[in-house]
Length: 160
Image 1 (tube, rainbow, N blue to C red):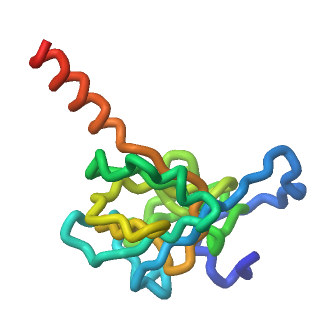
Image 2 (image 1 turned 30 degrees about the vertical axis):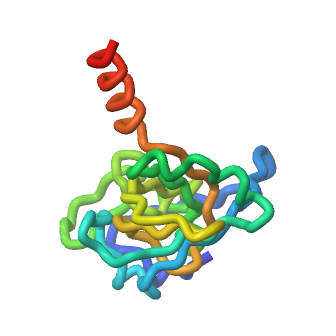
Image 3 (image 1 turned 60 degrees about the vertical axis):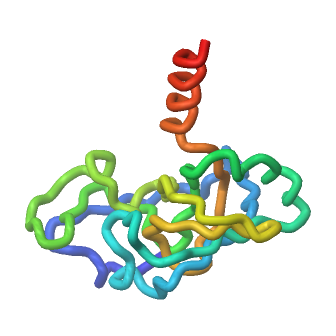
């Protein structure tokens, strides 16, 4: 756990018992050019750098058909985040807010999400744009973005 020196004025923490109620299986790793939190953009950008979503090769058949969509939602584990902050002072704001009222990566269950643009598939690797996480971040899951499903329903309604 990071030391208290990383706390901003007024921020508070809680001592949590070890988590034992869920187990996740990481399905891969995300490769980005971002080595530190300071390097990461606040939100991913459609014109951001190409990044790689490396799926465990044993799970490659689960990617069949992923090319049918151009937008993918990624869920990932922010493994280098604090998990004990109750209140936080967002960078540059000076305002103190509760963790659940923020999109901060510092949270009890540090799950990150991004909707990215799929550029291409290279076997068990997806090349994407739009990420905002550190290099080596563990991947929890991926699925077609919701907007793609809605677009398909609209297209089907117009054709029928």
